[in-house]
Length: 221
Image (cartoon, rainbow, N blue to C red):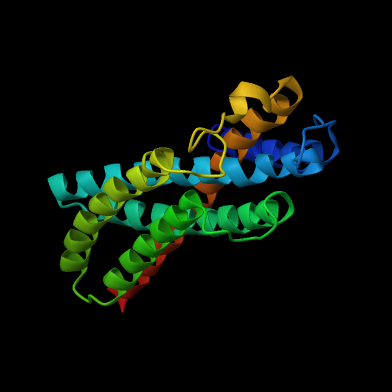
């Protein structure tokens, strides 16, 4: 039970997000209207992605310091789950944008930056798969992963603020905390961030366990 309590909480919070996010009363705001509900899925998934990518970069640093392949496994599997969350975040964002901005993709700086960030991590996966030696794969992958993370943060949180952007909190637009994120939305939004993040960590844990099992069978062969 000690090892599963956080998984139960994560699943419960995700179910709560799915139900409350669609049914709880939402503030009536110009243009946004009912589409504000997408915030409970789009934004928390990106929060979870950034948290897991941060942890991945930390494990890459730990691998470079220790040479322990265990940390490289943690790093790559966190990236794999983060990419899934990133794709879901982009998809939910495009659905939201289609109803509020008139098109799923409008070339908004943050949309473009998010897509570039995803491509950088796709390249990380391709780079690792092109190398056969485990130690070389881990070393090159770890260095790339650290630089990818250092590139992603400015792409998502700095550059969009320096130019015109339709996203709240960017390009002079007020952020959600300024007017949209009232008490009703906070009741769902904050649990959603925790729930989606815990779900991502659980998925990563399962992938790590499968990776270790596969490695064990490969050694026996």
